[in-house]
Length: 283
Ligand code: ATP
Ligand code: MG
Image (cartoon, rainbow, N blue to C red; front, side):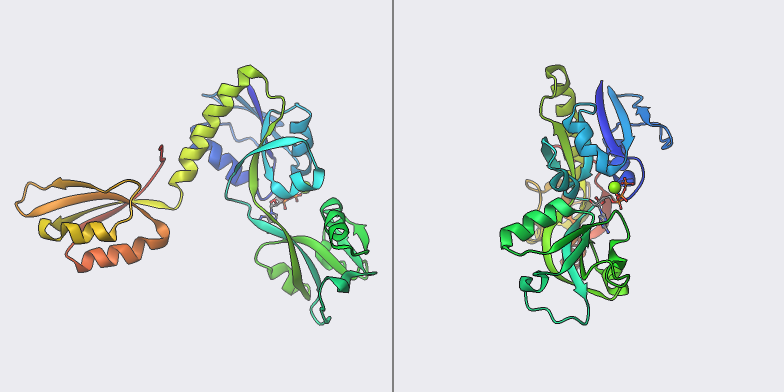
């Protein structure tokens, strides 16, 4: 049985459980429970505060877990980061009142900065040779300047909307973060195959994200033109149709180029174009 830590509620909870579910690991979703058991996989889920996950995995009470990379950087927990998971993307940035004149990092010299991430901030300031007064607060960091608690803040930013609505502007981005899968360093031998199986499934799910399966019919005479428009994982599958002079193409296209590609194919005579979701991709 592998013990897997996820955030009990909050920004990473839903995506973490979805990734498990898409990987065929179904856990009864009673979030109030501290521990859940997967019905069809040797896995127990531990629902925790995100701040606690790095330490619980480092200490071996959980074997693996999903947490924001920012929490690993802050805690300095001794764990292996085994995968970046592509969700929960954000950055840790310095922000100052929007009307302040910013002249570079020197601005922070002798000024105070409110943050919930004091270790990352201190390390950064030290590396840059800046001395500021770091004021640790647990939440509502963005109101600190208006409340007179500090001159500036160091906090999580994604769109920047929260900063703007609090009269602040981002001036330095210090750390990029996303959700990561972490593993304890001394994972017991008998759990290694379980971890491998989880990684295999996670990779297949992640690989399928942002991809579509595209099927279409095309006059056989336009095949080579169509092929030149199609990126594919290897090469598109081409099959003759029962009707003379027509072929069918099956391929995989990235969401980012999907519409452009389909419009071009239509222009060279493609018909009956089907765009289907890709569930898993196993290379
Ligand atoms: P907990 O109750 O578990 O301690 P929390 O309030 O500390 O939760 P959340 O706000 O749920 O934490 O954020 C969890 C993680 O999600 C953060 O550590 C960060 O990695 C990521 N995150 C936070 N804010 C954003 C955001 N605005 N956009 C994207 N990801 C974010
Ligand atoms: Mg937290």
